[in-house]
Every structure is written in C-alpha cells, then in structure tokens.
Image (cartoon, one colour):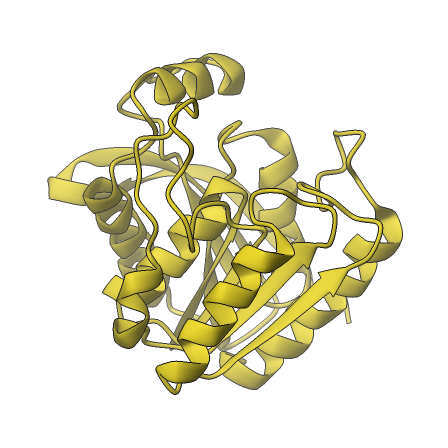
Amino acid sequence: MTHNLRAETIAIKGHGGDEIEAYLAVPTDVERCGSIVVIHHMPGYDEATKEISRNFAAHGYSALMPNLYHRDAPGASPDDAAAAGRNNGGVPDDRLVGDVAGGVAHLKSLPTSNGKVASIGFCSGGRQSFLTGCRLALDAVIDCYGAFVSIDPPAEFPLRVKAVIGEVDSLSAPVLGLFGADDQYPSPEQNDMLAAALTDAGKEFEFHTYEGAGHAFFNVTRPSFRPESAVEAWGEIFDFLARTIA
C-alpha cells in the first residue's frame, strides 16, 4: 500500500539545544505509525536522501533527516556544506548523537507516533546509525555500508573519527546491515569482524551482502547504483521495520 504523504523543511532542537534544519516526511492517512531518523551520507543533506525520506513516508513511516552540516555551512548548497564538513573532519560524534536525539524527540512528539523509532544511515551515516544505536535507546538500527564501524579510518582519510565496534555491548536494538561485496570500506572482512563482536555480545542482527555491488549501491545519482541489489535491500529494510517498529 502506498500512503499519501506530506514533506517539508522544519527546524528541530539538536545537540546542545541548537536549532538546526531538518527534512520531515510523514504519511497523512495513518492514525499511528513507527518513525525513522534518516542519517545522510557524507555528500550531505541532498535531494537523493530527501527522496529516501519520502519513500519511508510513502510506506507508512514518519521520517526525519537532520541536516548534520547545518552549523558548518548554514544555507549552503549540499556540495558546499559537505565540503565544509569534510574540512572539519566530519561531524563530531557527540554532536551527531545529540542531533539524532533531537530528531527522535521530534518524531515521538508527533500525534501519529506509536512511540517506536529506528535509525538508518548510508556511508558515513551507516556508522553514525550504528553509533546512535549504541548511545541512544532505539527500537531498530539499519547500517547501509557504514564505513569505519570496525576499523579506524586510514590516516589519509578526511574523517577524524574512531571505530565504534568497542561499543557493541551498549547496543540498544536489533541491527540490519546491508553491504556490497565489492566495497572496501567496509569490506566483507570488516563486516565479519562486526558480526563476530555482535555475536559475542549476544546482540540480535542480520547482515546481507550483495554480490556485484560496491559502496553506495543505493544511490540513484551515482554510477555505483545497482538497481537489483537496491530493490532487494529495500525489501529487507521494510521487512525489518515491520518486525521492529510497525
């Protein structure tokens, strides 16, 4: 069933009480529904990721995407804001978690909220989705090819972040991981490391790795887009959400 929806740019309270921009997409023909915070990829708060948010609303979930670069380059284009974010070494983890917490609070305040909230992230956002699942109380966590969950970035990378595999004991929710077999960050070996850590910690998770797909196989604006893998992965996402937050 495809739902009617409304999408708009709003302001929410993020980390430290800062007012930041966010994109909200909600189904308009439901009484109660689950919600999801969409964490954009390193290229930023762009139209492709807004379309992902609208897709969730069309499937009956309220979706909110915080603009993680709002402080770095307010009002800038997605490309310029992403460049500013990279120059700053990426979004600081504490700030990221605070902004996602603000998104969770806003989603729970909606009159249609059933009280359950998931997170999903792509690329750097996949790592951030996993991180927030370790530091916030969520109901589901989706990691789409999150780089540097299991290992630190190489020295030449612009990101100044650390691996989060050491925080698995604090994970609050089941995890769905969606990966490309041809990806380097994360590679299948890095994902095996994460699976072993989750197993040792007794956490609920499922990983799916798609042959012939590399990094960013969801991204319809890039040559890396793999339609068959993306369609199959979207099916896994909606099955997972139906079990966890619907």
